[in-house]
Amino acid sequence: PMMEALAVFNPETMQAVPADGETMGEIMVRGNTIMKGYFKNPEATAESMKDGWFRSGDLAVVHPNGYVQIKDRSKDIIISGGENVSSVEVEGVLYKHPAVAAAAVVAKPDEKWGEVPCSFVELQDVTADIDSEEIISFCRGELAGFKTPKYVVFGELPKTATGKIQKYELRKQAKEMS
Image (cartoon, rainbow, N blue to C red; front, side, top):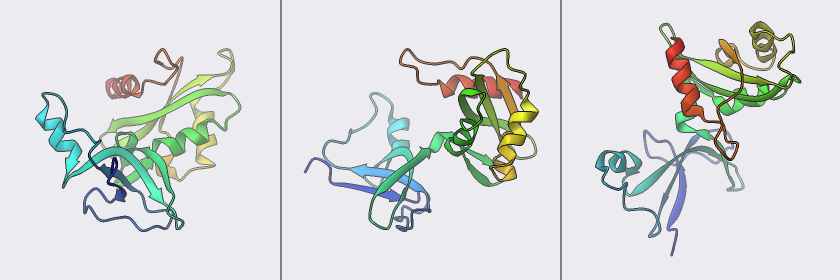
């Protein structure tokens, strides 16, 4: 077989998550087509392989019918005051705002909470009279308080040649703001 198995595990316990469509875990795979390791990087190999499973970094839920639904990337989860905040969920709310053309949410280091959501927003119309308070209060109407962005940075988002938002650049910017 090419792919021996795909499972969604709690990354701490390595136990399968229940098929309830809500409990999030990490997608892990194993089989003879999975890589042996990262080239000349034993640390990265050890980090991504556990008990013979390759840790994908993709967070997902399993539905009662067995379907696996990807929800986020583990490196994009923000841990604020011990609560997990999905950047994808917050971005989904930002995209509902009629003035927002593009949005990305990353963790900004915070003394009190560890990390807080920081949103980077590209507006449809750069001359629009929109401030961070309007964006934050819009999000507050749709999200729990701890998930609401604490900071909004307006401007063009850094993108790859194919148009993918470069979150690593935004993480760097958020860290520098601290």
